[in-house]
Length: 110
Image (cartoon, rainbow, N blue to C red; front, side):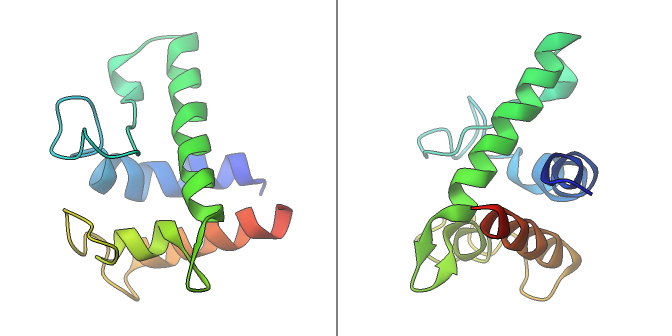
């Protein structure tokens, strides 16, 4: 499946909307961070699709940035780099595997 399909079928429903969106939204604990996500469930029609695209693009941007040879997305999610939410995604968990596969796909197309 394409990067878009993987994000919409795996990353967003199983990790992004469940774990990241709780804090990384306007009014959330991480609203001062650079990662602010939109909740597609609170939107309708075309705006819903645009929210998914914006969220995907934000994840792609973080996935492509390297911190000591690792993706910033994975380092942050597992509690590295002063992530206020600490280790939201446990190493070797299903969520971590999904994010790691997303990072691999992002960097394979870069």
